[in-house]
Length: 571
Image (tube, rainbow, N blue to C red; front, side):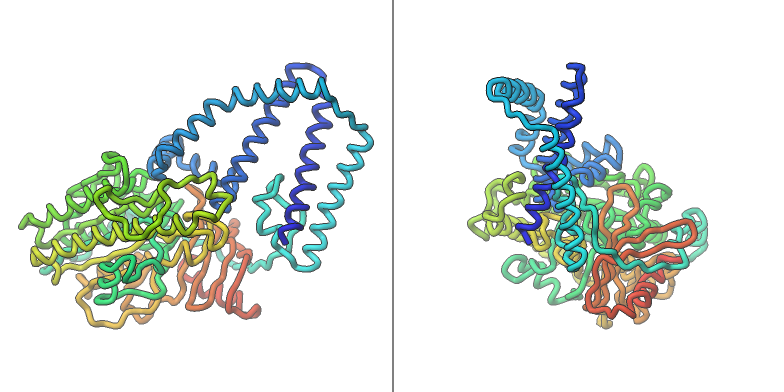
């Protein structure tokens, strides 16, 4: 498998080099010749970076650039701040960008001098023959792979020198006669909500914790004792999935209770913020936000909290204050616990808390003793992209960050109990997505629709003895909370999510792979042990679903399962 892929890569690289050599040989003006060499050098650098990126994220450099720039130049700077890269990596990036032109000039003069002293001559006909041989070899390997249904090369084509293969296995297409539903008209929806009587006598405090990049299988008694105990005593799920493998889409689905496939349309058209939060405001709640994470990423602050953050009564944004996420998380929880000492906050409050220590660098405060040793002191993304030698050390670092988050959550719970606020409070703890450690060939998240990036903890404390469903996702969080405090008001037609106690709740979970600001089109449909992975390709009056993979579904039932799963999102 590896040898064939290497051979295929060699022939592709040969085709690229020979093709550029033929062009260079035909260029006579010196200035154009040098411009072409410069472009070739930049292409070489881009390929080297692409090699690192694909090794780290299993996504191409073009994909990453597209994501970073899709939200505009402002979002690019916010994204770098949100990534939480360590200082050494910023220094490396700065040195590379600074020294790149000088290195290119040096390399040009060095190779030019070497060629003049020890020139190697190849006849054009020999080079042309090898070019044809390489092209034919690529074609034959493609044909043999397709004949034997061997798709390793096509699945990993982003790692090839040319970034593609010429033939790939034909994927099954399911054609649907309808297209995606538009999102609800915001003005009409709010006009209907305004007519509802939402005043309630009892308004228990609601606490919503959203934590970065937290896997379900790492919430154990050893790693996260407070969260593990909290889940055991309350409502937790063996099968809880995030709406997406990236923050911005998941946050959208959490706070709007809508399927992640509507992310782009919502971002471009909604101005009033989260409908569930608007409902809670109308019901007499105050909205308090405590954030360590970056709120301005893809303008999430206004998408969730409305234009000019009009929904927020009390904002505590620490995202730009401290140098490390761990310090910011500490400040966030400290501010939250201090606010609970105020008698005015004993009820009628929504507390939304964003924590960030488990993101990217996996951090904890200096005065917090790490439990899992040895651990990786500094994450070197370049070496990690090509080597698994330090993977266990990296996992230990991740465990320590989780243990730190768990410690902060335990501090909050203890404070809540000390203030006699615990019993009446409604609490939700959830992650925005999971985290991968090369389970499917990538590190971190935002690359694969796999359980490592999607299976998350979602834990409810609801003061209810009703039986909950055995599967849930982000879009169910607010419908569940709203039915707890307003059981006689039905909001189902406004949301895609349903209460975890709703017996008619759909058994299907829809999760999407991120595409930056663009509409997500790669989706994973999960139903118990059944999985269907593919790409939605909408057209004017219909759409098709290109199947990438399926598990535990008979071929003849694919279309039936897909149609059922997409009932909520197609017209």
